[in-house]
Length: 182
Image (spheres, rainbow, N blue to C red):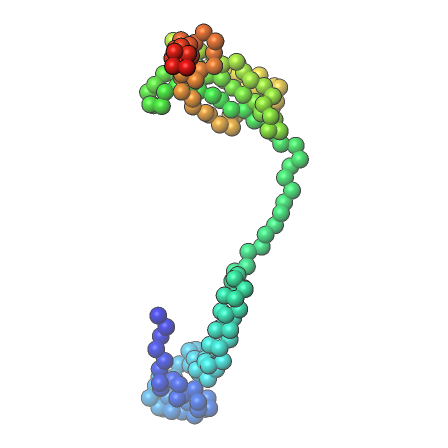
């Protein structure tokens, strides 16, 4: 909320500076401050014009639909012409956190198209450390040597019944249910 107008200061602003200092200075009532009063007197003398300028500027901003002082500059930068290939790690496991990993696989994409798929493997009986070694010692060195990939862009979790490996008991069970319902 704006401060109230001090009537004493409005009247003081209409006087000359010498008269104001004599009336309100050390010899007067003592309210004159050398740092504050000259700018305050100027504001009170020109208050009507300053407020009108602010109002007209605000109207222009509203009518233009954009704030004049806060205009946003838009810049268009060129994107690198050759996009780098990236790899996704697919993990087939149930949603719960302590669920064992059913299978893992990798896909490599370049320029929006799949260029390589590392065949998924079943992980039944594998421990976490064994899976990490498989990925770090077999899959990643191959991807790094061939495409320069050093990390997976995404790790995508899929349900075990979606396992694409032929002979998988879970996907075979799903296929039998679909045939009997079909």
